[in-house]
Image (cartoon, one colour):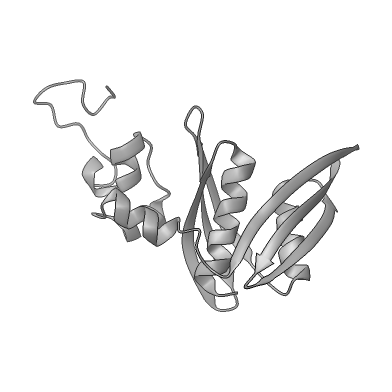
Amino acid sequence: MNAFTSFSGFAPMFPFGTPDADPFFARYGRALPRGLREEASGMSWTEFESTYGAQHGPVRLGGWTATTLGAGRSAFEATIAIGGTIHTASATTCGPIAAMTAMLYDLGLNIEILSFHRHDLGGMSATFLLCRSGERTAWVMGTGETGTESSLRAMIAGINKLGA
């Protein structure tokens, strides 16, 4: 039960129309970022997930490791498939998002994150990104057991959606 269902017959003020208009809110009780919420208004959860969270495409993330080096830096390594070719990529940065951005760039895949939003949902995390590659922009979603996993999946969804 949440604040929107706890009072029978009471229609609370909802800052973005009705809760049913936001498919993530309808499923998890947490609002989507404003621009994405407007784009996805009225979608079913299945529609929303296939439009914004699809993990299919030519770029796929396999393994991911991180080794703490100290002074706020870590060494990251990933296995990234592009079509039928598998690459091992690495980067030393202050965090996994910067590392994945650098690895993708080194592989010729450019993505810029314009907006970053994450909801931790107890045992699950959902990350929403507004991404740009060249002149194209798109909202994407990634889910996972951790914030890092959901963020990396969202970045891969962005690369695939934008065809970077």
